[in-house]
Image 1 (cartoon, one colour):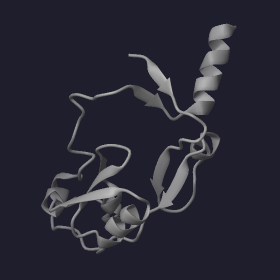
Image 2 (tube, one colour; image 1 turned 60 degrees about the horizontal axis):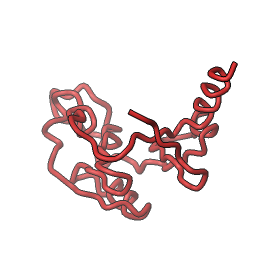
Image 3 (spheres, rainbow, N blue to C red; image 1 turned 120 degrees about the vertical axis):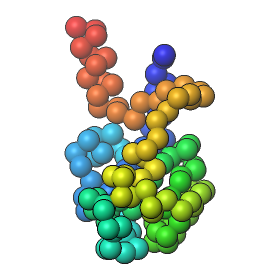
Image 4 (cartoon, rainbow, N blue to C red; image 1 turned 135 degrees about the vertical axis):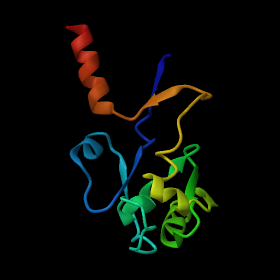
Amino acid sequence: MSTERVSRKEHGRLLGVTRQPACAQENDWKLITASQPSTMEMPPLSQCSPWLCMNVLSLSDKVIFCEESEKGMIELFNDQGFDTITLPFRNVFEFGGSFHCVTTDIRRRGHMKSYFKALDAAEAATAKA
């Protein structure tokens, strides 16, 4: 499958807690600082962090699935221009994850995009050598 290169105006986005890692800076990704989890209490058998609130699923560049009790995250995504689909998913936390952990792509439409400009440039230079 061919890789469609992302234009300079189009930025990847990174959901994070504290700081932007080097790979994000190198590739002009926009850091979106996560809101605090709605609660620090997790279901009884869960061994996950309350920061599981960050485990969302991007359906497209504008649509995100988010756990319905995570009001801060929902507001954050809506403020960032995302269409946020909320679903009751908290009971799944006991099994070790949330939306992103329990899904896998089986089919995609369109072209694969690369958000790693620095890596793409390095690979192109190596290919020319």
